[in-house]
Length: 380
Image (tube, rainbow, N blue to C red; front, top):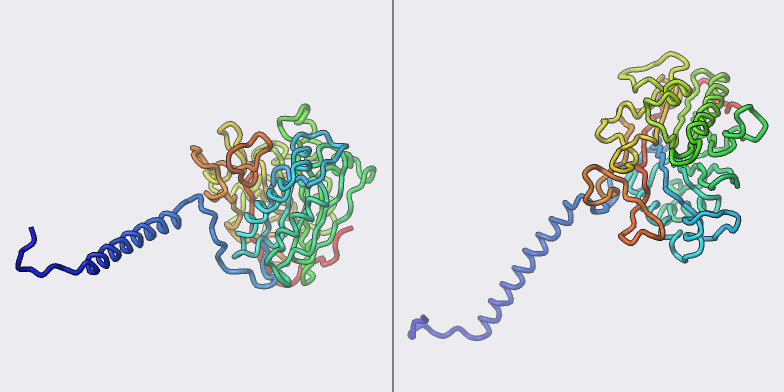
């Protein structure tokens, strides 16, 4: 009870006090909200971190981007997802925006220096993604180079490269050129990075899914074709700097990876390595973070990067130790799963919020070391 002798406080003082209390309460709520937002593992982060200096290092990213179809329905291709993305306005553009957004979180907002993509429909789809990636990038940060070959066989989920450093098409693999050409022509592409006379060769491949009939035989054919290309390139220069990557739909311990491709060696602590050695960089990644896709609760390491012995010497390019990684960031992952699971974009039957791809990307950093590589002339 108020003391009768105490002067009554003006009404304006009560109003001012109430306003101050309300402002304080709002500030506390905003601070709590900002804290929760900052610490939300699914928040899409603002790109951060240093950018690489010139071409002294390269961040290479390999990603199966899950059905990157263009915005025109191809009447010659009977495919539910291609039909949907080509007929419904905005779907293909939305897909490109999400993939570009994820890629630009690499390299302090610049994106990877070299991007190897699988499941790209055609040149139009690749160009749409390139345009989206280049928004906000200037000068040498822009992706001005690409390697891709249109192929109208099969489902049209092709491999392709985008690059901000100079890149040329490697020796074109044409039907009839080699015994394995029927497989090599489909979903194997060869690119050569050519900055500062330090050639880096990249072979990118996408092998047949396990859900396809006779898929074991087809994957064996791709493995043979890829080995033919690896041997051809190494015959010209045993110390060639060569990365072999893609979605193999096989685990690192598969006989096709270990025996046909010869990639049974984990990353060494120190180099150099004997000529002919093929290192599977996935074997150096923590097994708890090695899965690049999840199917029915089981994690699979189907997307892989292999490196030949030339990438562990002191010439040309060298794999940075412990730099290989699977980008299973929480914000790229499905919510509410018991293990990291890629947040897929989905199809016309997907009614929840769309993500990015049903695969995680795989990355590795290469450093320029010593003098240029022994052979600065691309193998033809």
